[in-house]
Image 1 (cartoon, rainbow, N blue to C red):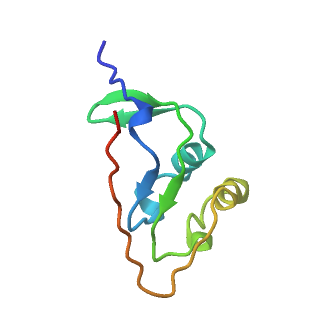
Image 2: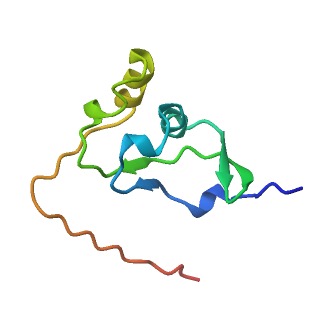
Length: 102
């Protein structure tokens, strides 16, 4: 069996950096944001995403300007699945890894 098994518990969220809507079809984005199980292609193999992971999309393009040529209902489904956060100044994020205590 060539199927790749992914442990969904390895990931806390999905991060899209410098997102441009031409990078991924609207149907795929809606399936990811919907949270249901979905097939994922990984280097010529296929796996299944099972967990409903939060998505963070960073982009200079407003969400309303994405997928403008797609059907209205699919586009509205995409837009309503996200909360828009606008940064007006520089933001510094520090991530500290906490080791498990035995």
